[in-house]
Length: 179
Image 1 (cartoon, rainbow, N blue to C red):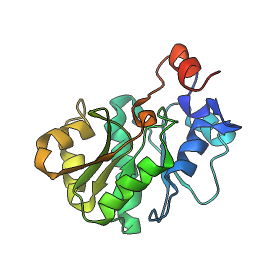
Image 2: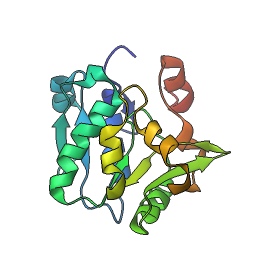
Image 3: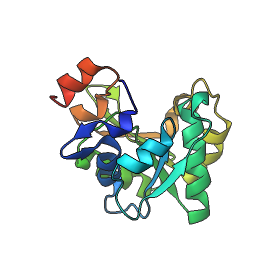
């Protein structure tokens, strides 16, 4: 993409600021964002909302799961009963989709994922009981390994089309965000 995806513009802000606002829904006590590649630049330019805890993942080259672990390191001391995992490159998930994942977690789900047209999307939610499985997951498979290892414990909720739309190329960005 030519730079950190977290800094891509969307709706007068950046992807990361937009994602932080998206997940700051009723029922979400704290928002923690994990930054990796280009962390100094992201901190300086991203306009991350006040009150959001920013955690740096110096091991970002190890893969996305290493960022999940850094997020867990920050969330567990806060007494988190559950976490939402929302990749910064999925900027058009509807707030209602996030609300449905949060509601499933509040009802005690081990894991909750939005589904649209029989495909799983983002954000994924994991209850405290799943934290150990996230920490033990193989780095090359990440949180998907936890879902695959506990298929009967996943609550699927209605998702919107946006929960499936990841931005990985400039063409994706133009198609999804319209720039």
